[in-house]
Length: 371
Picture 1 (cartoon, rainbow, N blue to C red):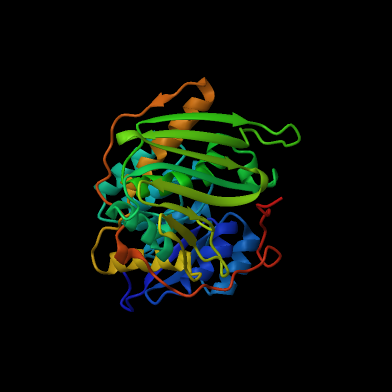
Picture 2 (picture 1 turned 90 degrees about the vertical axis):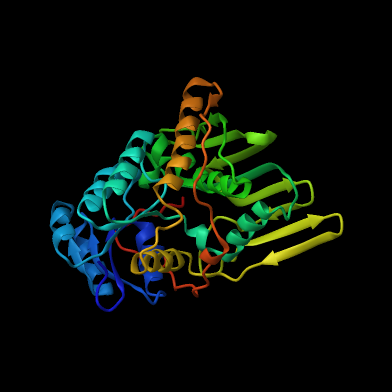
């Protein structure tokens, strides 16, 4: 389906902060992908972004026409989570490939609809786990599964920020809040470090009295995995920014920070401590959004299925839904046993140089995420 120039043509669906700040600049760092279209309900974005990137603007009412136009190969869906399902299913049914921002939907049932739509389609679906192509993260995942750190016992993580209530993330309930948005990062990290899927979930949430969110703005989650492994993570929309995780094995402990964020100056780094001392593993910043786009386009051009497919997204979704249930009931939620068919491999790590990011002042018609 890709064009004769061997560059896969992307339509950006949703012109919010993540699209403008990271994805659209990142595509320019690839050698096999190009921007071709923008779908937005904002006429100012449609005008200015389309001119900036030399692409064609479409409205959401024209989405079906765009899918049939022959002018695109892939849609990158970066709308609020609640709008993912219909947009993705329409694209897959039209034979258009989909790069879908995480979390993949706002319910397990909708995630299963997306997976079934992909199975019925000849098109490919990749969930946008950009860290699956970041060299430091890929190294930690593969070394952990290879036993370099010994038998793994425990994981703990903190990922927090100070989010403005005015941003769309601040008033769309649990599925717009910190657990699906930020908790997906430590959750996906520990699943890939352990190479296992959790069997139970317990969560505790709090609400800051001076904030106006319509969800628990700080949430602590405890996961139990097979073979007596445990994991804990805390996420928040109401604190200063923080990001780190610690993985404890019988041979080594690793502490990673930065570990989840992106940017021209953000290089993933971890310190490995053993009985022989400690060693810092520092990685240069890379173009994380360009990396994932380069990888997905390569899969399309060469007829390969991407690693971070619908199943990977669904494995996270079932845990996110269990956290929601635990917050509502106060009870521990037991998950049925599950196995992931694919895992991140070392050859997925890419090293495209970072693109220049626009500042918040340079972005068009957005409500800044940070307070």
